[in-house]
Length: 96
Image (cartoon, rainbow, N blue to C red; front, side, top):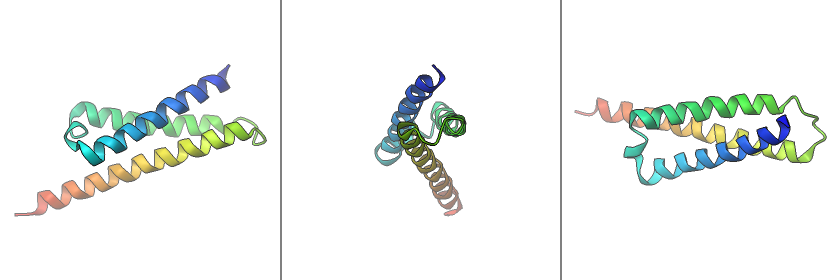
């Protein structure tokens, strides 16, 4: 039961991470809101939590390993986008 719940949560999180990537590239104003920051931060934390929860399963289960790796990659991508956004924000604030 826990495994199926984690798989569903992982699929939803990967979808949210790709939605964040889409908004980051094409409509960044929606991510620069309070709701955008909360969803961004919450999806990163939940992605890390689900990834480490997945490690309790057997490493022999190929489906769990693949889903866990996809979740890790999408979470790292979202963290990278957040870092780049903060760098861009700092650079633009430093401009006269």
